[in-house]
Amino acid sequence: MKINYRSPIKAAILLLYVMLTNIIPTAYAQKIPLNKYGLPVVNTVTLYKELVAADSNQVLVDITTYIPNIRKDVRYATTANFTHKILYPYAAVYLRLPAAKALKEVQLELNKKGLGLLIFDGYRPYSVTEMMWEIVPDDRYAADPHAGSGHNRGAAVDITIIDLHTGKPLPMPTGYDDFTEKAHHDYAAPDPAVTANRALLRDIMEQHGFAPLTTEWWHYYLKDHKRFPLMNIPFEELK
Ligand SMILES: [Zn+2]
Image (tube, rainbow, N blue to C red; front, top):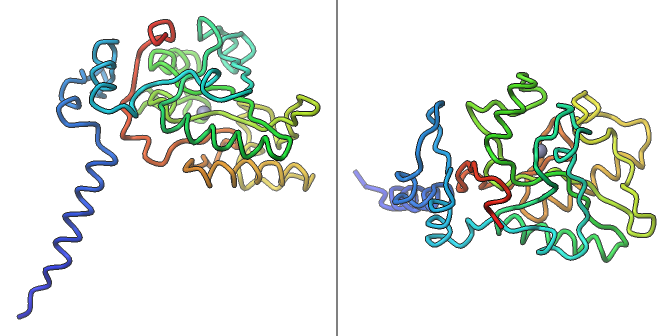
């Protein structure tokens, strides 16, 4: 019988690749305390800084200084959101470095077309996900704290496109945080221009490594977002 040595090697390489790209550095994974749901959540600045020292891609950057001319409309810092409560102490958008880098490329490409990005949300402290769930315990509207969200990993964004000339967002099938079927990517909007805008956002985000969520046209996440642990550090402590 002839033994095929190639497959086990390929399998080992694949395993190593998955380990390197999807798993938080082992030494630090063990240091991350488990919360009441058994999820590892980084909850101190000291631990966060250790993670960043081991892997510079773990740093959370303020995208308003990192990405030129990006606009933000952080509804969670106001009562104008689906919970009708102020969830953030002030409007801030942080993302892990690779997400910020990718988004910067998206912005530069859109700017060439007279367009730009308007961001609603990025990194969301885990405790805010818990607050949202307390107010609206329904996974059609909010992330279940048993799993956490890509936002808690600093690797998901809620975003749309604006026309730089008018400063207004391009018409999309729904407003932000509209939890109806009209927000789904497969919704057939009556106006073809609206469908084209949704596709423009999706295409450019996918070209830069983001994946869409089928039920929310505004939500995108890095495909390898699980390499970033859930975080529960308030904005104030990231400064
Ligand atoms: Zn989102």
